[in-house]
Image: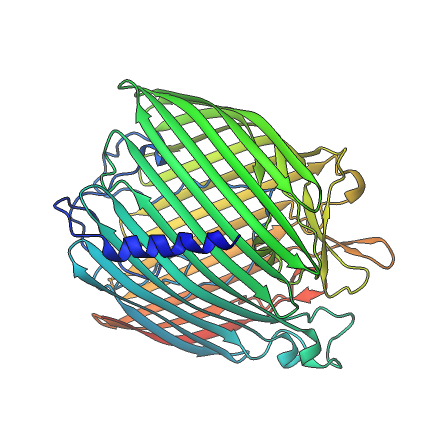
Length: 555
C-alpha cells in the first residue's frame, strides 16, 4: 500500500498551483465549521444530487431546517450532550459575529479542571484562493470519578486550502488529532488503581482533497474526493485508511438525469496481526423529476474483501425511491434500498473509545430496507420530516463489557445465519421566527428483533429525543438551551450473564453569549444542570453539573 501516499501529494500540489481563472465562485470553508463565510461572488446553489424537492419559499426569511438521512441503527451515535462553545466543530454556529469576521479565537476555563482554546485564521491570496488554519484544545484534568483517573483531552490542528478556476475547484486539508482518555469504569470504584495503567491515547494524521465543478448550476456536474489517514494508539493498535468518492450527474432530457455514485475504502488494521480490508461500491441510477413528482431507480453494487476472514463477496442491491408532492411544500416519499457499511477501527473508537484491544472488524450489510415518510415546509416558519423504516441487517454489531476486563468493551456481531430486523422511526419538527428564535425537536425510536445469539442490542438506545433552542435578544444576547432524553439502553454483566437496564438519561444544558463590542464577547455554558449521574455505557458515569466561562475575539 505504499502507493497510497502519492495521492495526498498530488492533491496538495494541484491545490497550491491552481491558477486564478476568469470564472467566479463562492470562497468558503466547508470543512472547518468555526470559520466564517467569505462574501460570495455568485449565489450558492445546491448540486443536483444533493437537492431535495422542496418548492421555492415565498417568505423573505427562509427557515433554516435540515433533513437528516440517519444511518441508524448501523452506527450508534457518540453521546456527549454538551452545549458546545460557539462555532465548535460539529456543533451549531451561535457566534454573533459569524457574518462579519473571518477569524476568531476563543478561550475558557471551568470546573473539573476544564481548559478550552480554539481558533481559526484564514486569508485570501487572490479572489479565487483561500487558505486557513484551525486549532482546538479541550481537556478536563479531573473526571467524574477517581479524580484524574478519569481525565480526558482532545487536541487538533488542521490546515485547509481552496482554489478556483474557470474549469474546476480544488480543496484540500491536512491535519492531526490526539485524544487521551482512561478506562475508569471499574466496579465498584477506580480510586485504588495506578493512573498510567488505565490510560490510553490515539493520534490520527489525515489528508483530504476534492476536485469539483465550480459552477454548481452546470448541467453536467461532478465531485471527486479522496483522503488518507493513519491512526495509532498507545496500546499498539494501528490503522491506515484510504477512501475515495465520486458523484457525477449527466442530463439526458429536461426531466431525466443519469447519476453515478462510487466509493472506495481500503484499510490495513494492525493489532497483533495485520488484516487488509476493502469495500468498493458503484451505484448507477436514473432520476426523473417534475414539479410534483420525482422517482429514481438504480443498482448498488458492492464488493467486500477481508483477508483475515478469507472473504471476497460481490453483491447487488436494487435502489428505488419515489417522491410525490400532493400539496404545495408537502412531500410523501417511499422506497427500497440495500447497502454495505464499512466499519473501521477509527469509527469504532469515535463511537465507543473504551473498546478492547484486538477488536475484530466486520462490515455491516443492510440486505433490505423498506421505508416511507413525509417532509415539508409549512407557513409561519414550521418545517418537519418523518420516516419509518423496516430493515434487515447481517453482521449487526453491539458493544458489551468484556469478561476479561469490564472496563473495556468487546464488539459482538450477529451470527452469520441471523438477519437482525430493525424497525426505525425518525422525525423532526422545526420552527423559526425571523432571526430571533429557532427550535428543533428530534426523536428516534428503534425496535430490535431476531438478534440471534446477541440476546440483546447491547448499549443501543430504544428511544432518543433532542430538543434544541436558540434565542437572540437585541443582537447583543444569544441564548442556547438543549435537552436530551435517551432510554431503553441495556448493558450486561459478563460474570453473571445478567442484563442491566441502565436508567433513562436526561440532560439539560444552557449557553449564553453576550456581545460587549462588535468583535468581543463573553460566553458562559452550563452542562448537565440537573446534576444527573447517568451512564451511557455500563460502569461509566458521566460528569455532573459542569460549566465553562470564556472570552471570544473575532477579527
